[in-house]
Length: 342
Image (tube, rainbow, N blue to C red; front, side, top):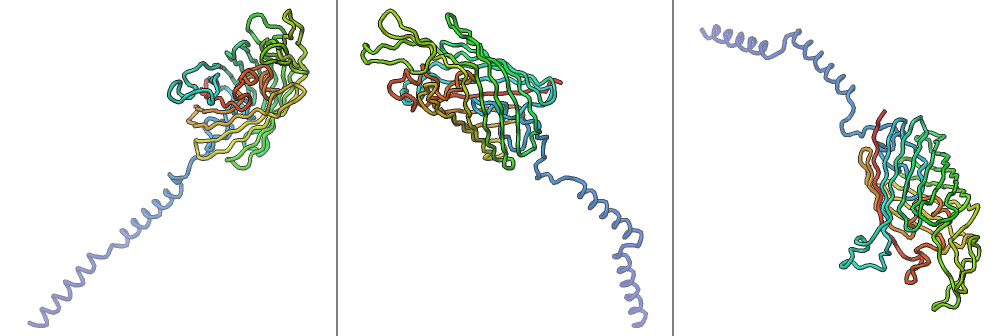
């Protein structure tokens, strides 16, 4: 009886062990399923790895260095074929040093020069645009075409931009200027770019001003202005007319994060054009898909080629500001938007 009981228990243990182990068919099915799961995992990209967009479309680049413009200067980038672009600019007319945080919100309550621009890329690497600024006493229109020679993913970029500025304010002379800009850029990875913009303008002109050494305080006309003529009050009237202007402004862009960039621009002072000082501007820019907002600050308020080509233009608010002169800092912003229409 004891032997029968032990045999019965042994058989039960063997049966339970057999039930606990998978059959060969089950083992093969489990192995096939594990292999399929592994292959599927390898075929799928890592969800945390950022997708690299086409670098030719600046609105969706992983590191959005620049859009169509840096701050005031043109960027080497041209929108993709079939892209419609719109640009809004504001440059406040009062320097921060002459404003009050409480009274006029650091110059934001005061007037601004407003610019509106529209561009379209009908062909690959080609952008056609116009831009109009409400700059006091000038109201310039700018018409331009820009062609990009090298693709955006190259470390070295090159574009050629040609166009004209037409000053539409009443009672002006020498209204039209023709310009050419060679835009040369070097990018160090996707986070840094430096751009040189050699610029030639047939002539620049500003608003009419009167100078008289007998006034209090006395004022004297610029030495190289081609427009100066004597007036009936014993002084001189000038409009800031200079011909065959050439300058090389510089722009720098740094991507801090995927969507935030810093920009800076500087234009050398040119004594032969009576420039009162070196022009500079800085900005911080936030980028979304095909949308950019840029907050600007600097002593350069001008946004058209005929006005920023000389650095700081003579006869503008820089020489009229007796308190701060070229040290005045003016705030502003750019807003740009792009649509893929074709």
